[in-house]
Image 1 (cartoon, rainbow, N blue to C red):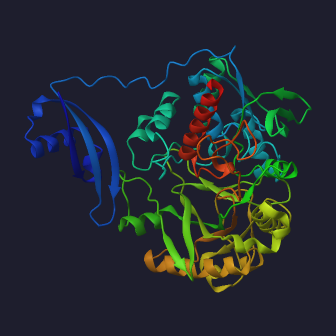
Image 2: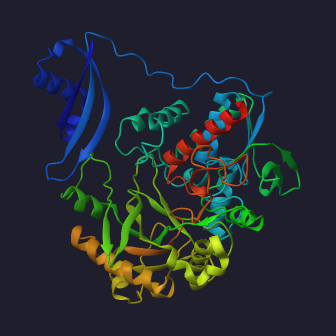
Image 3: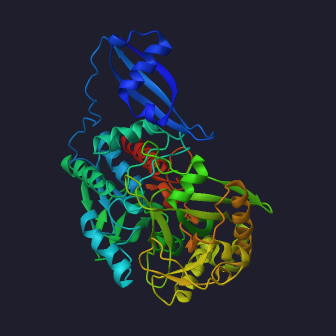
Length: 519
């Protein structure tokens, strides 16, 4: 038989199965000799007190052998000769939409403007070493989308939107460890994600779907408000009556294409700010309230939100034991993001610190209509590029200097490999964002003693937090409100905010698409 028990134990105890069995026996009156095995179902850390504890939900096998890990791979049919559905984009939304289409019995044709994960690495290296940005293959574009090389955080608050466990199961089926089904804040790691993404692609192809790389969509063919297919950069035309549009939050050319075709769009509020880097050891001391976290605690994250004169200022995409990456998607701009390897074992941590924006903040670009927020975002990224010497070096400033508006006389080496240029951030950011961040950091320092240090370095801008454009869709059919057969999907359409929520939205759009075909 099996039974579930909840435990609150020390980090050392949480990492020792034999000790856990002993504790379970003592707390539940189960004979120690009858406990054959245990399985941790859920795990979280409670670091609110100096005496840090792990909260565990454990399945206890009593006089029963623990079964092997189940096979989470669905029994997909072969769809090579079935009706075709175009999926534009091979990020989480697009890939999981394609898997769902296969499951429903339809053939996905996935069109990805960038390269496969292996080939993509060379283009990432070119950004770092030579400051050359390929507008089709970079940290945002290519197989797996932005998620492949930006950490692989799987935590989501969107649990009401769909089946989170199913998405996690599919990741495990394609090579992720079972820990992502256990941890409260699951994380795969940038070093492991590429192989998992490749495995997902191979599943799609094995069952009759197609995945085409370097297949940039330059036109969506629409007649009488119905989609008819797409045209690619090389003038190839692919016909289909159903298109799932999952291009991600940085596909500006797609937003501009839709606008030029009078396909309805909406400006969408987003957040913009900077990315700050501290030593991981300092963040551990602040969060764990100890001089050394030891071998049983993971590198500490942080999450913090403040209100500054009516605006939200908050941490975004915090990366313990990680690095800051150059995430421009076109020449002539600078963009930052962060990621961590699976072990989160780098000596630094980083986090976006951003300010919530409102539609009135983009009023100066009102002539751009629904692309006003996008233009606001673009102008800041281009200004950063010019101030950093027209290269992929990033404008940087020591944290205390930032709050005082003082140009830093020197910048210590940071994890941002293309390099830094000392800049007073008031020259990069609009005044209202700059002033709000200055006050926000001071408030952060009050809540996290030691956070406010001139050893920390601010990098700018952190500008791709979410899509600055929303592609409106019907709440029931999930089709575009004006164009039949077009399913706006994921982060780029304004309906998701991370890997899990994007994957869930991809599945939902594919399911609605399949229902529409079936009639």
